[in-house]
Amino acid sequence: MSRIASAPARINLLGEHVDHQGGTVLPVAVNLRTTVTYTAGDAWSFRSADHAPDGTWRRYVQGVIDVLAEAGHAPRPGEIEIASTVPEGRGLASSAALEVAVAGALCDAPPFELAHLCHKAEAENVGVPCGIMDQFAAACAIAGHVLVLDCADERFFHLPLPPVELLVFDPGLERRLADTPYAERRAEAQTRGTPAARHVADERARVDRGIELLDAGDIEGFGALLYESHASLRDLYRCTTPRIDQYVAQLSQVPDVYGARMIGGGWGGAVLALAEPGTRLESAMNLLSDDALTIHA
Ligand code: GLA
Image (cartoon, rainbow, N blue to C red):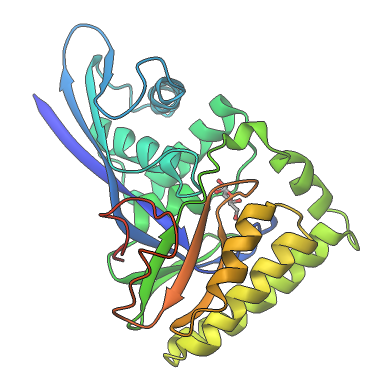
């Protein structure tokens, strides 16, 4: 008996580092995916054509199996085979895509529950006190829509994405979130008046405004919020890098680009640009991959 499940990578349009503070986030699933084939057998074995043999991905897979067992889903041992087009450590939530694909192949829980189980697996086994955005995006996002997710009560709805080109740039700064000050900055954000807390308050206001602008199809106005978000991540949350700042500064000079910012946990990762449909910037920068040059929602 074999079962196949897959889950997408995400970009986050706006609402960075607000999920762990109960804010609203705006992730979009993109056309980079992790697919898992599970074949029941006598013992567990994990294989991946797209990961280093002894990489941390094994911990994620085992973490999901453990959490499913604790939650009463007790998957039968078997072979887990993984194929993925999601680059790791680039702010595209590769671990969430992997966790949700594994969980989806091993049990029939509905998307909302998959997101929760996988968030638990991430927090317990990987040691990063991350919010719920990535696992919810991997489990619940639908193509061509923004997942408007309120991380305080976990209610969400799908907002159609207006016509826009989503470009993702890879400044070549791979990192593991567990090796960054993610936890330290999250703790700072809980103390009123600190720079990190100010970022969270301002970013939450930007998300509220951003939803209105998206709803009205005002991508130009929405793009301006991306630049503001980036400046706040740089100056208040202090999680960008000089190289990433340079990318965003260069992108701000390109006429067809409405807005750009670092996405994901930070201290590395990817840069997102929102541009006029049809925009191609291949010669300008080192892009993620040819396929991902223009990622599709
Ligand atoms: C990582 C975490 C998310 C979120 C983002 C920053 O992707 O996994 O929960 O906190 O960083 O917005």
